[in-house]
Image (tube, rainbow, N blue to C red; front, side, top):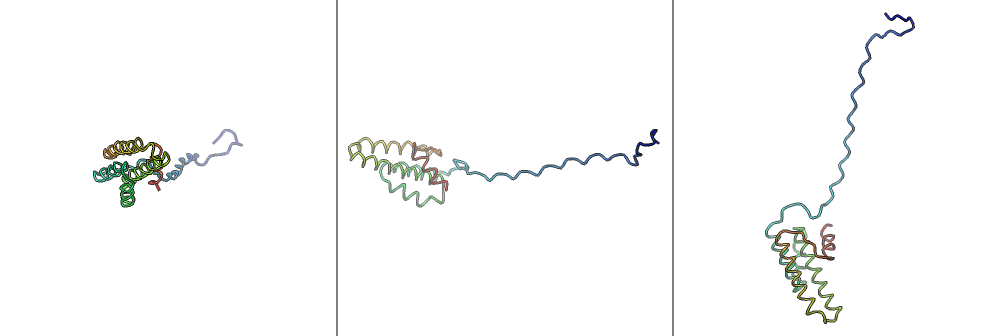
Amino acid sequence: MPDDPNEPIELMPAAPPPPPRPEPAAPEPPEEETWPPAGEVSRNERTTAMLALIFAGITFLVPLIIFLIKKDESKFVAFHSLQGLLLSLAVVLAILITCGLLSPLVWPAGVVIGIIWGTKANGGEWAELPVVGGWARQGTQG
């Protein structure tokens, strides 16, 4: 019995407070497409990408045909063949703008750039050409 008659009598001890509820997990954000896409690049893909870039210095037809055939099968080949196509068009445009005066410099430069980036593609690299590489990336991400 309590000593003070006005003090309430506890019939049962107070129950401990309930444990805190775990907060619901926040929904995971949708996965963003990373660049370069994850995954191993096959030997066939590397060779095809290399050929698209090497022939880009000679003609735009080879990278165009490779791009149209492989664009849905391999992002790696699509990316490099589109770079090759854009490189070919840049070389042709540069020659046309200069009325052919710089073709002895522009055309060999296009061939050398195609060989260098073709070698990188053959090594499995997602190497971007300056300027046109970003356009090729955007063109193959969609």
